[in-house]
Length: 106
Image (cartoon, rainbow, N blue to C red; front, side):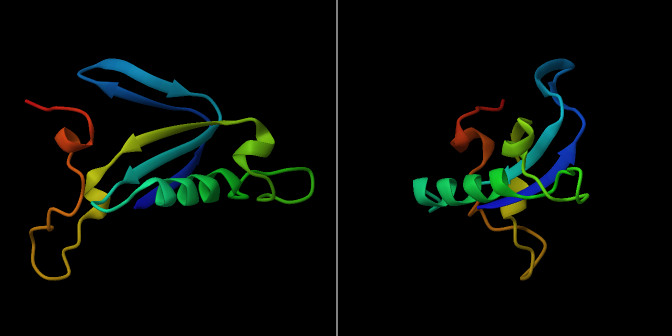
């Protein structure tokens, strides 16, 4: 399981031109889930992301977490994060593709 985390003032996801999710200040998390990832990995990564001290307070520019600021998190499935092109140009299918992860694409 891999995540790319970005602090945002706002973020939104659009599908076919329609907004399907949006947040104000908080975290945008691009999440790549791989085969074999289970509840233990989810709990560990969610805890780490929630406790990342990347928001400012009166003392330091990066001293508080999204929990401390009462911010939101927008988590977006990004199966390409699980790709590994170290041995060629076609990533192995160890990632959970969108149709496997719960959303079926035509």
